Length: 338
Image 1: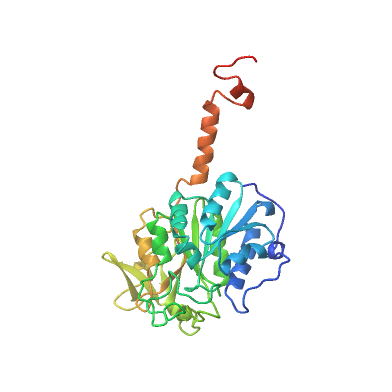
Image 2: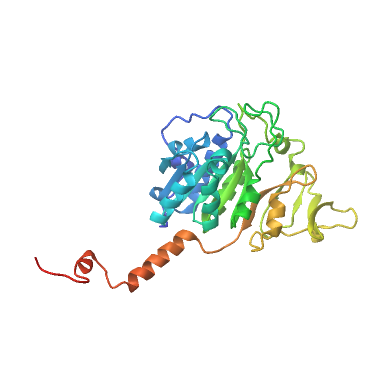
């Protein structure tokens, strides 16, 4: 995509439309982080396209002063894929929810990832259907009491990171709505990645699933329950930076520095670029109380990406073709005068 030397600010990406999310909804913070991230990319304003499906998060294109398309339920991945392949110069962002992407849109979701199309997929995960008033979603916790599971769900939920990596995903990151700075940092990295980047943002629905992520936002304990992974840095966490992750055989293990002889040198150093997905899968699946939940860019692996391969193939075919124009076509094969 073409670079732009124009200096933009977050305000330049805010539309004149009234933002109609509920007061306190995590969507406000996520949008704020994206609007702060876009000026850092050096991309022309007219080269951004925001695509959405259906759901609270899918109102997003209206609130961005960019090109956008509000699609139908579950079909944002298909529209975003077509947009990017038709015009590879665009920076395409897909805004979707846990229901839109992993229920009705599940098939499109996994195949966009498998094809590794160069789109930035931001997955708002509030573990509920908010727009349709509180039904359980594919990520609702086992036993969750909702409008459609009054006695508690009996379904095991999808884990987005596990699903992305299982679909041969090359980029997966996780953040949380109330950490705008971390969201912004991750969005910039996602945009610069060639191929499908999936960012799961844990988002709070104040009306139908309030405090769904309270375990991770509790001020007193959050630093002991979360770890922010950055490539090349040791896996250390905790309020006092006194805990870490080591590899114990084939499993991850939490240790306390200074106990049992463990020092910072014993800790795993995060390698987001490791092609083998095994360690990334374990990191993406960590959960409390035994482990901290991983945030940051968990996996970022380079590889061939679909739209680039299609563009290369078209150029090769065109270069080898004997027919270069409509005139060539009309005069090819058997011709006669009338």
